[in-house]
Image (cartoon, rainbow, N blue to C red; front, side):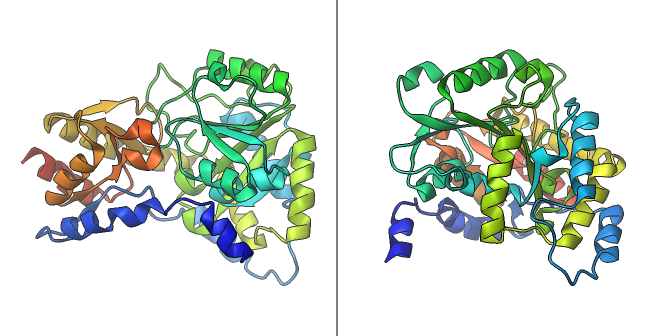
Length: 369
């Protein structure tokens, strides 16, 4: 009965609605080009696979907090790649993928009935789902003034955004930090696309950067995943970092619940975080695919909007997203409807860059034929 009660609080799984269009795209003589899901398709780097193999003899339980080597690697990565110096290793916690932390953070923080969780109006659906799992109330809002006296306990940011690729500027981030601190709300930033900025005018900046938070991480959490930068979606390799007190609280609950990252994956993460070369190589692959698809959609009469960073193009031709999905599926190209990400996305579709070069070229040919 309890399980059915939880299920009743959840929306239908949106991707099931795409199945009929996938079947139509599959009928193309050369098969479907699936640009609907952002799952990596390129090889896991050798440096990571070697580290995983070397750590395969792991008979004992790993540390829930992460090995000292992993925590130091995360601290070094934040300083080197994100401009966040002096992070406390105790303020770092490995997670079994970033989606797991998005879904369970409200529960791990002890939120429940009467608490409000705010997320962007166009957003990854799991922010909403996480609030529902905890019994809290999800609210989609970009304008903080519209929230009034609502009992906001957790506020989500996603910069760069999935699906839109929008990057929040430093001035905006500062204002949100101040707003959350005034109300005692936890501010969590999902930054898993941070290494994939495409626009010089909109560089992704971390919530933990001194220019944003004033050097204090109080009340702040940042989530990051190696799935995108290092092709490690199958490893479920991610972490959360920020306020040492909040991280300690999360660690305490995770110890009791047995939410532990496997030791070989921790070793693989150390290797991935310490090697910038493979990240640059993967970034270049996505840059090439992105350029091909931007040109093809423009030639086919679409507009690519926002999309300053991340693994997706946010595309429109001013029609209902399901009509666009159907039209593209008839050409053998499958994309995700913007409605999956909230009512504000109903006139856009999301196009993933995560297809092999040959499939991206095939999509471009079909769009411009």
